[in-house]
Amino acid sequence: MRLCRFDHRRFGVVEGDQVIEVTDVLTGLASPSYPLPGHDPMIANLETLRPTLEGAAKSGSKRPLDGLRLDSPVANPGKIMAAPVNYRKHLEEVLSDAEIHHRNQAHMRKIQEVGLFLKANSALTGPGHAIPLRHLDRRNDHEIELAVIIGRTANHVTEAAAMDIIAGYAIGLDMTVRGPEERSLRKSIDGYAVLGPWLVTADEIANPHNLDFELSVNGEIRQKANTRDMVMDIPALIAFASRFYTLHPGDILMTGTPEGVGPVQPGDSIRAWFQSIGEMTVAVAAEA
Ligand code: MN
Image 1 (spheres, helix red, strand yellow):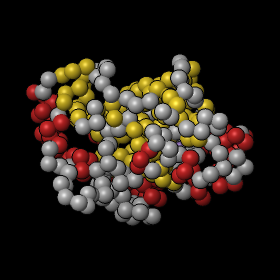
Image 2: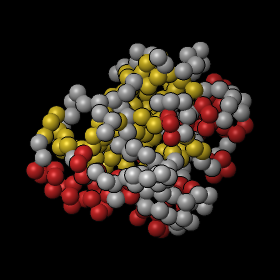
Image 3: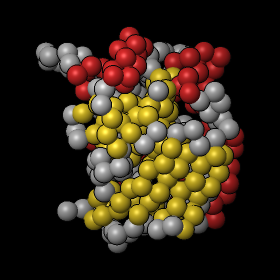
């Protein structure tokens, strides 16, 4: 099943190039009282909601996806985790390009030593919104990544159990301004965490470790790889993360980018494609 969000409050099931709106299914999901939960209520209830969603998708009226302004398929993640340099060839690229690593030793070490970093939730956006670049005097790079959406609360997860806590997958763009500051600062600018075009539930992707993917800018291919080349695979990343913090439904894990990262500028158009997920085109703009 493929689930999308659009027009800020609307929720849909994607079938082919059509969307069936199922916004009403979400009524009453979120706790109406303060404090709000620290997880995403739609993802937390996904298994319970599934028969209703499937029923609504059969009877609901279809509309074309084309022209809809897609938001992040997950509205309220508790956290956005991300893996640095998780593809060997990208590590080689980082080591060889001073503009990427800025002589910061921490940026040049292996993922097993560096661990994960967090991107601010306020950076999260969907493909229907142009990425508002800041610091135009510095290099702003694209990074395409497989994004894993956690489906249930879990702590100290073993690698053997890790795949069972996944709700689904989406394409992630881990946008980055290069420079000497901490990753969590440079990668947390508003709109620098793009998730889309929709969430594909885990049952639809038998093997997430063999997916081709590709990113192009203005029609020129920049990144082209396969998830089989991850240094730490998805179970290893989940097990690692959950030794530091409890994972919650809706938490997002960006699994790292392969070689080919490069700069974008206002006016550019990014196309990101993932086998078994789909594709999205995201505009790049300057901060208004
Ligand atoms: Mn990244």
